Length: 497
Image (cartoon, one colour):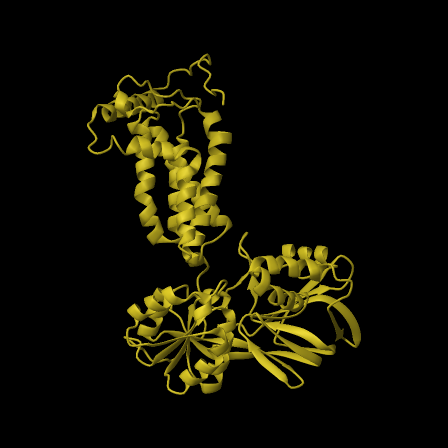
């Protein structure tokens, strides 16, 4: 790195207000240098060095992501995105616009000084900008994580004056710029709190202060032990049943015979089975996310034990739509998605190989095999004409994109099936990628999208695979997909509670 301070540049002319502010800044710097800072000597210089190149904040983001809660992962991603924007702005505009030399170190005790002095210009402070950007970004998504990160960010900013490498005004300007970067990122990608919750139909359900009457069936293969223990502490009178995936449906049926509220902890496949049992028995459903993706629970607004516990204790619930498919003697429901074509083929190949080589390798192998196939996996009749299709996707509710974020549902009771079609043709991988990137675009030569309440397909070949919420079945001839509006009652904390 070469210095970007040009000490030979002519000094600006005199300006009374500016000169007074600079003089005040120098006095504040000297005042801080003369003070005795208790306990700061062994901490602040090390903390300042740890924040070089954002290392401290990337490590903090990794710790937050490792907590495996969706809110923490979103907060970490937002914090790092804010830091990146702040760093880009500092390095391209800030440092080169105001070419201010670093403070003279004479008033600063030797024990405080950094071993390697920075050689870039002083205004504004990049460390303060990064610290404020990360902390503000995190706090905008998760106030609790923001409260944990905030004191560290404040200490990093303070350390830059303590070690003598910045004037107080450098740190203040950097912090303001960093916070501004975090708010700019929020403008591009709104937080979940900004999006709000649609006024879904509220439902009358029993309030269970201690969880009495709730029977929670947990899929032990989904790694739910920790969540189940947390739920036991939050709702001590709830009945908890842990079982293997093969026993889930039988245990759900058994629980439904004596439960006031049927609960399920597992992935989307387990939630699908529980929703079907709850519908048949007329029971409200309590969903605790316990799988890998947990689309239904997260779109509903239940991200963990705290959310579910608050809803169950307070008797807070809403009614949501359910999708249903029928074909000959086969029928079922879906709370997330239903699809025909490439995806069911991929699921079948992946499941065949996953026990031998593991989930991720099996998924990659399945994608390569399916996309290299020389035949279309689906043909269906539209308007009296049979057409080849690579993929027919049907969502229970309209999927949206928010800024750069992936698609999610904002309303689970909108009465719509979100139908996406990738047309047949050559180069399926290119067509599928184009459809994925286009997101909410409704028409192109490769794909189309429409929202309907009911869909009927005819001319479906015998043995065609249909995937619903991660499960796979076979359909034939005619397939009908429809909505069951507000059919399912689900516990969730209400925004104004």
